[in-house]
Image 1: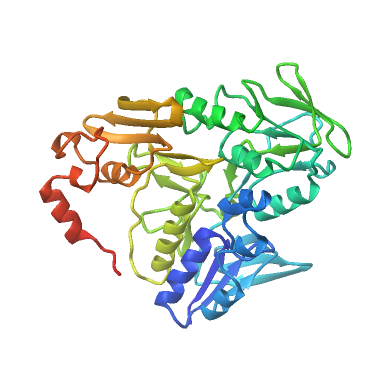
Image 2 (image 1 turned 45 degrees about the vertical axis):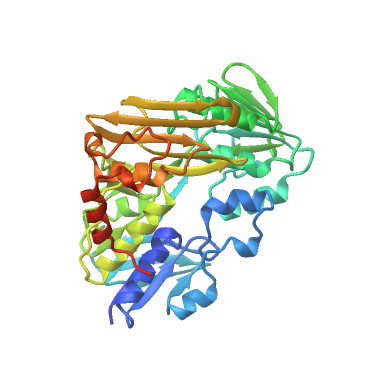
Amino acid sequence: MKKYLIIGNSAAGVNAAVAIRTNDKTGDVKIISCEEFNSYGRPLISYYLNGKVKSENIYCHDEDFYRSMNLEVLLNTKAEKVDTIKKEVLVGLGERISRISYDKLLIATGSSPFIPYIKNLDFNLQKNVFTFLTYKDSVKLKEKITKNSRVVIAGAGLIGLKAAEGLFGQVASITVVDLDNRVMASVLDKSEADIIQAHIEQKFISFKLQTSICEVQGENNVSRVILSNGETLNCDILVVAVGVRPNVVLAKEAGIKTSKGMFVDEYMQTSVKDIYAAGDCVESLDLLTGESKVFALWPNASNQGGIAGLNMTGIKTRTPKTFAMNSISFFGLQLTSAGIINNSRSIDTFVDSTKNKLRKLNVLNDNLIGFVLINDNQRAGIYTSLINDKVGLSTLAYDITSKDIGFNVYSKQERTKKIWDYKGGY
């Protein structure tokens, strides 16, 4: 009986376990998780915070799922060391330390919040300082806030803005601080970011951009934050949401080749035989640039986990190259983006300021390589397909800037080919 061991109980880890069990009914499958909860939807933690999602609805899988799949899950268990010679993982379970052997190992350790240096900041001492990446973060934050709380959020990226949305209506004030000159700077140009910011500001959420928190005041609780521009903000709750870093220490110490994330081949295997990796801790090849990047995306982690699981059971399956994609909403404003947003030629930028609508299409050498859609996402699937297939725009049946774009944008020959190549089912 083959022994499968998975470190990580989120999207990548669970999908790997399902793929393994689907193809190996008798193998021993163990999942290690340092968290205390069963698998849950990380994108839902802001909705739990604002009360739109109840605690029982945040879980992706309950105990019956693991039982029916014959998966053994060890919660509150940290993987301390991987012994690649003995093919064992040293784990901590409460006060006990034990070893778990494996034939095939998947490392799906995800990422952790990046904490920048801020003078006097001490997460261990100050009780009103939080990160916002896990369900536990959301639970702790929800327990601490009051109607009188003055909240400061460090970071105007996806995590920081979702934290602001989750806190809205439950606290006295929210101020978001970011060193860049716009929100979502890693995803959006200034023109698109301004639409998002203006929409969020309607909820009386304030922004302090082109500055950062350089110091906090208060011993057991942060009472003030000092900004690099000299401004001081009173603070009852501080949320640090400036980004994440892949969890690769365990892999690096085991001799696995890493950079920002773990390097894997097209079968999701690391540089060490019989050890695979998937999810936010992995570097993937960008379809558009050919560069090795970390794509911290839920769908990407799910797909990689499933493919890793197949390969762990001996079913050779290649991982397709991917590219950056985001689909998110802020207070009802829908943002969808994909591919390369900068360093390209915009062939079409449509803005309807009265409805907060924007469509931006970027092209390079006759190929669509990126787009941004705000409150105009009906054609996102077609645009994504054009990028993924690297379709020459000059071969299309008509101009993709047309408002009635649909599947018939492809030539009749291409439409027929796509229909017959479709691998789905009913």
